[in-house]
Amino acid sequence: MSVRDASATLLRQGLQALGFELGPDDVDRLLHYAELLRRWGKVYNLTAIDRPEDVIRLHLLDSLSIWRHVRGVTILDVGTGAGLPGIPLAVLLPQRQFDLVDRSAKKIRFVVQAAIELGLTNVRAVQTRVEDFEPDVRYDAILVRAYGSLSEIWRQTRCLLNEQGVVLAMKGRCPEVAGELAPGARLRVIPLRVPGLEAERHLVELTSSH
Image (cartoon, rainbow, N blue to C red):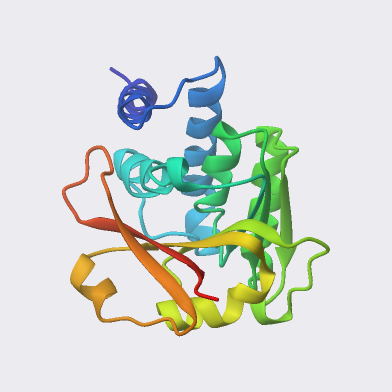
């Protein structure tokens, strides 16, 4: 079995375990994105993860594990880096609009190129610091992966939410989450299961307490 065939099998099994109903091109588009990550990764310092199966598990399936908790239509991915979790979610949730924000020009250049190659008309990439971001909408959901403490996340993003909006912060072990505070927010910790990963993953849902 070729590396691509093995990656396709791993990805398809993981997506089915997460409950996705796959379109005819979904696996191919996600594999294309994984190949772009590996190809551009070293030059653009996108990720230290290089093995194809690790890219599938640690980037794609990890990003997609939150999909059932993503509310609404307007979604903001803060500190997106190489487009994670925004691009994998945008592939499989085409009816939703994803704005991907990062301060790094080279990472946003990669996100723009990836969106073009994948034909993602529901992705907009913006180079800016989240503190300086002034969108023309307020978001239904804000996604954060590997970015700061809960208090910092809430302080920087709550002004970008609409009244019913939610911040979804992807975290690791539950004890680390339990020690964090986000003044003015209600916290709900949701265990996640990422197919093929033994490591703990949790999603912290933050909503306004007022």
